[in-house]
Image (cartoon, rainbow, N blue to C red; front, side, top):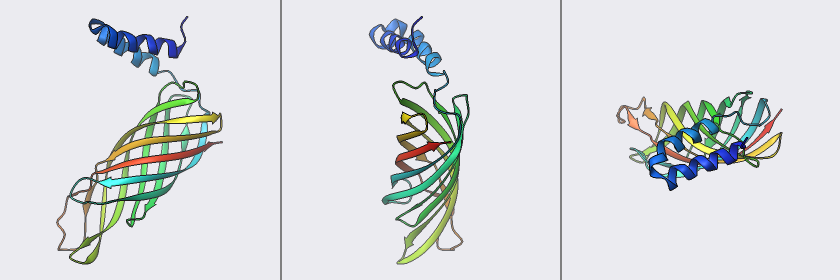
Length: 189
């Protein structure tokens, strides 16, 4: 019987080398990738550092630092909480779910979805105005396991935040869409 990586390679080859087999190759890849990862089950704690850029009604960019913690189950799904603070006086508290694909030579790709609560100080007519918002986020990335208890990873996420303010000069429903690039380090217990 072929291993997971061999089946995945076979499915990718069928997708791109034989156009008539594109759908069958894609289904094979999804079935292989849906196997549980071999990362350790249990709670984890970690750190994350990132660079974010605002793309909606707000403009600017900056760095963020944060803490993360969660639980990795024996299935390929884990749940987590994230808290962070950035140099543009922004903060976040978010919850998310990650789906981890198969692990190949220490690398494990994932996709994630979540919901967060955010705050930021924005400049308006030479005054600092506090905006508060919430919204979903989606992302993807990978972790590399140097051993069964530690991983480092990189990811990219898009946040779809809607901000509001108590300041009457600020309109409601401000588009705070944000692109976030992160590096993370997790320790599994």
